[in-house]
Amino acid sequence: MKTDILPATEIETALRVLKDGGIVAFPTDTVYGVGSLAFDNAAIESIYAAKDRPIEKAIPILIADLDDLPQVADVVPEMALRFAESFWPGPLTCVVPKKLTLPPAVSATQTVAVRIPNHADARALLRAAGPMAVTSANISGGANPFTAQEVFDQLNGRIPLILDGGKTPGGLPSTLVDCTGEKPIILREGPISLSELMAALQD
Figure (cartoon, one colour):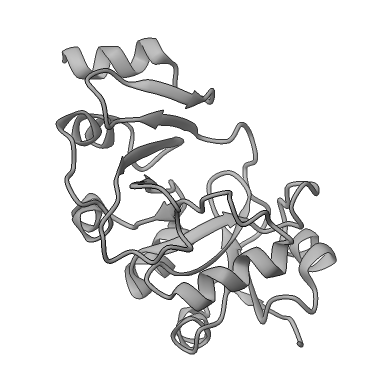
């Protein structure tokens, strides 16, 4: 497979790849991600193959706007809505009940992790494509990629397209919080603390 690198503005080209069942790497507000359309099971499976990713590791969903959340969440907990209004777009990933129409390759459980990235190029692609299943654009366990070249160095020949939006900010991965119970449970520490989450619920 030939891997092309194009400017991040080449959204129409990316859409053609995605609608044809392909996967695309693009910049986010942390590192470069690689993703497919969220409802294309075969394409999501190809993300696992391209990354050598263990199949039991669920893949998060990225959306462009809060209005997109009901497309991927069966029921949106009030807690998740409060967090979304306070911290999206940004480094918070909310675990919510999974929409039954999402394919099994996204998650083997009844939940799905969702986030809005704070990155103009990423959100432009997501607005055009709709929700996408996205994870870091590296070989599983490899170095996180902050540039299109670093993605190419790891995934050349494994994916068809990389959108180059320059160097990404890097930093910590997003805070991952389970919003399905009565209280928030942090599953992965990140830039947003439990005290900040609790303050958002009290506002």
